[in-house]
Length: 123
Image 1 (cartoon, rainbow, N blue to C red):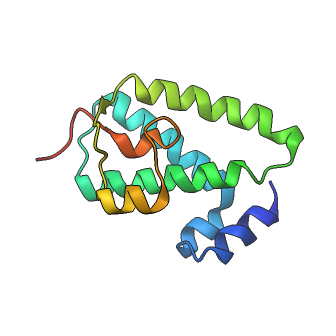
Image 2: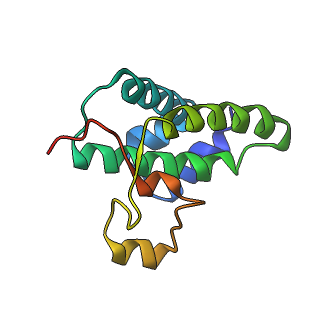
């Protein structure tokens, strides 16, 4: 896939492993996470938020794909998202600080990943 996505990730100063891995790594990580939650693995709060930040970055990267690649890739991500959503517990006020939610304008419809917890969250 496109080096322009890696360049974008670098320009946003995301972690080196994120930028170097590009869309392929973001997709692979998301698929791994979905399987982990579906399997019932336990998650810590900080790890979960970090992974949801990864989902937001994935969304940014998807928008940069050439149109001919967007349809199939977005369809694959949508399938993963639906599988994950069926396992999650909604949280009306979000999983991150309300100041950040307001600052970035996150909504539970568009940015759903910031408004759900896995069932096996460590206490």
